[in-house]
Image 1 (cartoon, rainbow over the protein chains, first blue to last red):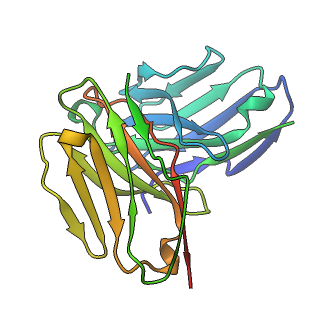
Image 2: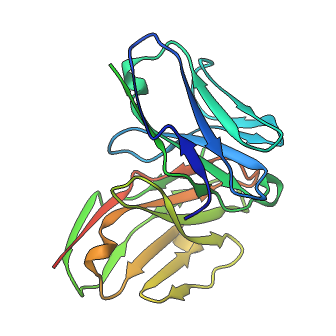
Length: 114
Length: 114
């Protein structure tokens, strides 16, 4: 196990609602990255947080937002949910973005939007 | 733009056969990082290996081996004497110099039959 935890494990929401997903990074890691994985596809980069600031963002609309806390845990918030937001959301932590450290993934949160 | 291509969508082998998973990448960076991850049905991405672009030495770890060829932009993964427990989706990923995003391929579903 990587030591990266995510909650909740599963979530069902309806279109238009808002959702918050949580991630605790591995001890000693200061960088958290979020990915969306649609069924049958590879993970797509959403954004990364390094020392509480956003560092890099993928091709996702502003309704996808995040936070990183002083203990380096992180949240992913999605507003105005759409059916296409149904996916596995993966969080990854790494020791230090500046050193291009390897990203270690958590078990993911499966989100279903009805 | 970074791109990773895993041309093999699905591979099915019989236990004890050797199998090679192909990965071809595109990048304009002179320094970059390549990864292989395994995703079992549970969904968590398990880190297997990391290779830096300036290190072309091939690597063997037990039944796993990796062949990095910069000249052909390929980073192939071979499992020797496959086992049923190797059944999973395998992803090749490209990391950029900034240490932020990973760009994943679409994955190869490997099924090892007894």
